[in-house]
Image (cartoon, rainbow, N blue to C red; front, side):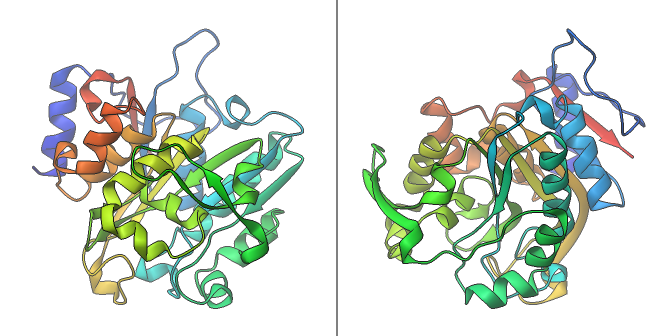
Length: 299
């Protein structure tokens, strides 16, 4: 299914899509029902991130004054932003700024990388962007990981990065990418970066592990970076030719819906992804976007 056909079918199916330009300062009017998901397309990663969060009611809907907030991007690979292996640094910078403006006591940006942490943090551009916006950006070491009971259906316990679970609010900020094992890596797969231990063992039942982790972390907000996506040779890519400019950011209160919308950028039906079916069965959200209030904007 082509992306344009997917969006068309959403409209025919009754999803509440609003089209046309909008003002960056505009937020959901008082008393109005906020959308579950907003997808915003535009030239600037920063502006479309602001607009997507604004469409859901603004960051003050998710962050209260005095909150300790963790922003969890994908910083897993020693790649530049042009390779689309890590979350766009401007998306991360913008979210840090919005969280601080909402009155957060502290903002931490953290990920347990796959390649060497310092190289990933620096080369991705995320360390500098997050620090300049006022966040702390620590590396994950053994002292930050503690084995915890997850009570999942397959993953009953595992080592978890404590910075994440000790936060008052968590914002999940994945990038949309191809993945050799589970077809796509987006919001649910991003939680592996909040774990420690021998993570390759999680690949034995990767779809089930992803859902168990998503049920454990429960983010306040998911912001999917689809500005430049990795369409092949994922999850780390390595060539600009493996990427595609979609110039879109998706913000959602439903993490399953966020990944479902992300699947449309790859012309994949959400129901084709086992982990989305499992997540919906577990009550974590829905991939049936036609049942949700959705807002789509182009700026």
